[in-house]
Image (cartoon, rainbow, N blue to C red; front, side, top):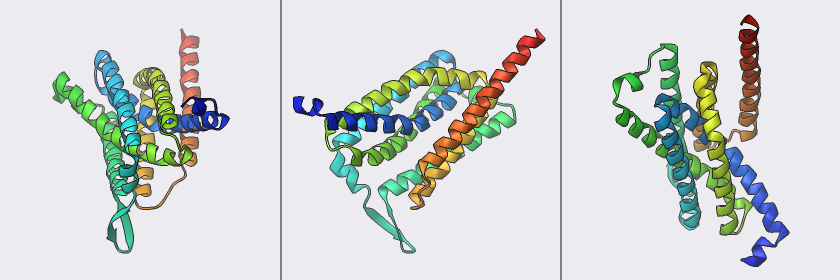
Length: 241
């Protein structure tokens, strides 16, 4: 164990894997930021804490059952010559859920009504938010860990990278969630990102891999444009006053 943490190769693997986990966690943070905007601020903070704690728990659990996890990548059904593993099925289901959820939220924003807030009791809405977070945490955790397994050989390094990434996700989730809640156009942009991420997950499930670099570049570019739009609107309001 001591030799592991004094090895330059181990530190290089830890830094690389941590960076990868942070990038893969962007999807989680975006979903959390959008979904908690439907509930009061006090409950939203609890939901973020529970959601990220579950994300950490799912990732560590998956790392401790690597043999079973690797088995999920073996084909279990073949349709018209194309094999599908449990991982593929989970990614397709999770992607369709993301697309449906984001489309539903976009419809609510466009129609200017909030069926979840108006039609459900607060405790029921909170439970529904947590349930959705659990579903997406499982999908993102599975994709994240399977992607990262090949980068490190030691379980201790993988767990350390996951813990560090989840701490950074927690630190960033609050400001991101508040920014999304305060800027409706940013929320619409985040929902569009969720549709894009959902399409990528479904495509992965059908063996058509869309390089994540393209998706993250599109997110970063759009976020930068929106940042300047928010800044311009703020400056115009300041000049008018």
